[in-house]
Length: 306
Image 1: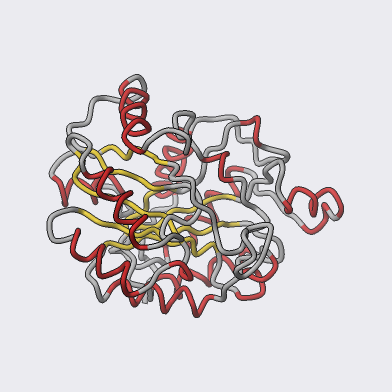
Image 2: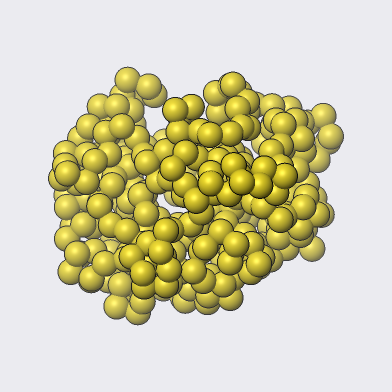
């Protein structure tokens, strides 16, 4: 038995087998990029760094998914079921008819059993949730919200364009539609201490999340944060691997046990990175180190959850 609620087990409980995500770049943007609530986007964001090579908005959704399927066949064992993953930027930041067309094309791909939509709390509304709720009658439909931090000062500093209260309202609004919900957090954003990061576990646990991803701060080239780092490197602190894993464990010990942990760290191709942490190891090795530390410390997810 694992000492944390693992993502593969979460999927096996739902589908009874492994399910593979196929990432899609639908060519959308974000409201803090086009001037709606700001310009420049989040200071840490270079969306292409997390975009698989086959994702290109010049290609159709179907073509991206076909190339994604072939891509994963060369790296992992074959999956019999797939999820269409609208990953890049804010994928509900469009008119309803555009969202309908995106989802319809994705669900027509062979063996697709559902959709995962990455977005922001200020890019969702009642009409879109009505539509997604209808899809959820016959498909797995999940919305992944970028939380990044529960601290409003941090959100302002990284130019999110919304506060934490907006995130809470959007997540609760989504939960009423009985849709699956995930969240993302970044550990190491400027101005946040370890204690501030660990304290966020209580707030995150209060959200009706099913899954969560943790990302370590990495400075991407061609971002506002890269400029900030060059000007004021003392504002940033980068965790070594062992220190980071112990921080994640402290957080996980206070995390609601029912929340499945999808990732404990992020992977970015080195060509996108301006600064470390460069741990120089595959994610599966990092995950194994995390599991070994849980064993070593004889601890588990939710140990201190109240």
